[in-house]
Length: 448
Image (tube, rainbow, N blue to C red; front, side, top):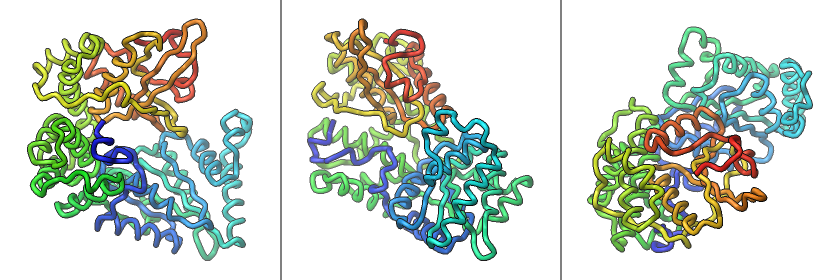
């Protein structure tokens, strides 16, 4: 939308955890250095926690990029696994077991103990090579208790001199509370390093915004005034994810007004349209924030798509419900991209599940406008959008619009609930990534 106007090579405030955008604030820099130290010294068990949106996953990915070739790594993004599946996933990442064997069910008689023995043999084989192994588990606060106990057992894999497997648990603040529970005492006592990521202060917010603008290639084309950055800090409470949402919308406002100077009113409008409250308390959950964000964004986008003369599709499905609950849409109309500005959006290869929100026949003259309207609505709500073109034989070619690339179904169900809350008539459904990219869909027909 605004990338070409400002000269960006890519979206500077995307919500994806791209490691090149990691800004090493005091807190993030210390965490990064501490993790590298723990891996080099083979400290065993490390726990990193932080509030929702503080950049934990980005930190993990940046760490993986800096690990040398003598360190084998396993990154678990989906904590909703059984004990056996966790062990198989670790062995897959270490290269001990192929995904074809485990995914095809060709190892039905392999026991949990045999999987542990295979891992132990692999770790022992690293010793003469002077190599090491690191296991990183993201969203660890969602780990089931039996899996946490299995992880504790894995931490016992050691020789007389050193730990064979370094384990890093990364999660939200409640992870610390979980570990301090009486039944988790054995695991908690094995933690040698703990670190909590902190939100950015005002100075760091300014540096963070400048850093992301520079990485995206447009730092000289657009500027946030000092007072605008004050508002960004206050509205986001220094949470990087909220900073990204606010700055992205502020840049959209700047583009709409054809200005290269982002001012406090633009930031205020962005924050209000996203329903981001000033000095947001830390205990407010991200799910609550997302719920209000989606409903607010649906109202704001409604005005833009209607003002742009888009088809009645979005109006018929969204307008009556949204206006009845929240009143009429505001008059400010941010720019809507033309059909030519809709770039390919392939579903990531590592996606496990996604949400199918709509399918459109390629032969329809309204398909481009429908896809555009749906995309703008979803992306303004902070949801990543992907496209899939499928050939359904006699039914012709269809373009599917997908939301999110999920590693666990629970997160997908949460976003699906938010979508249906904002637009109850939307025929959205959760699909596996494989099914979403194939010609078939569960109901036998494309949702519209």
